[in-house]
Length: 123
Length: 109
Image 1 (spheres, rainbow over the protein chains, first blue to last red):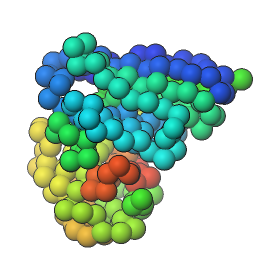
Image 2: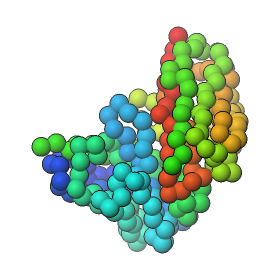
Image 3: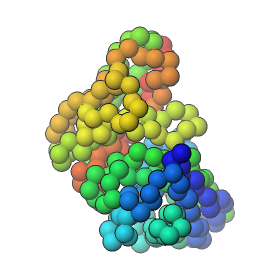
Image 4: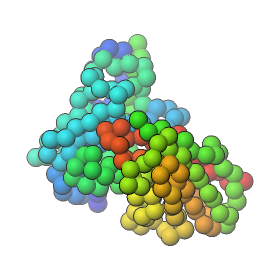
C-alpha cells in the first residue's frame, strides 16, 4: 500500500524551530519529487515547498522562503521540512505529498497525500 | 504568481444533478497544467484530474474537466452522495509558484 506518514508537528513559540518528517512506503521513493502543502484551520490549501528526486531542484513559496528548508534522505525513504523563525501564520496542518514525476518543476501534480501533522504556533 | 479564483464559493445541489465548478486564472496557465482535487472533512485531498481533463487513477468517469488559457471547468455528471465535498483547482505551469484556488464547497441541497 502506498503510504505517507507525517510526524514532528506540535506546539512551538513564535520565532522557534520545528522539524517535520514524512515516512514513505509502498513505492520507489527516489523515483519521485516530493512536496509539502499546508492548510490553516478552516482555510484552503497552500503549497509550501518541493524537491526533486535527487535534491537538485528545490523551490519554496514566497511566504516561507529563507525560513524553511526542505530535504530528503532517499536511503531512509524520508522527506523533511526544517521550519525556523516560526510565525503565527505558519500554524496549519502540514501535508506531505508525492509528485507524479521525478522532477520538481516538471508537472507538479500530487497523487498521494499523507494525513498531515499539525503545527501550532503560539506563545 | 498566478492567482486562481474559483466560483461559486458554495454550490447547493441534489444527488443526481449536474455540478459545474469554475476556476479562473489571473494569467494563462501554461500547457493546461491545471489539476483538480477533492477534499472531504477530516481527510487529505485526493487528485481527481490533471492536465485540465485527464482523470487520475480510479476516478469515476462522471468527473470531467475542460478549459484552457485562463478558464477551466470541473463537471460532475449525476452527483453521488459521496461527491459532496470541497474542490480545489491547482496550477503547476509556473513553478516555483504552484498555486491553489480558494475552493468550492459542494453541499447537499
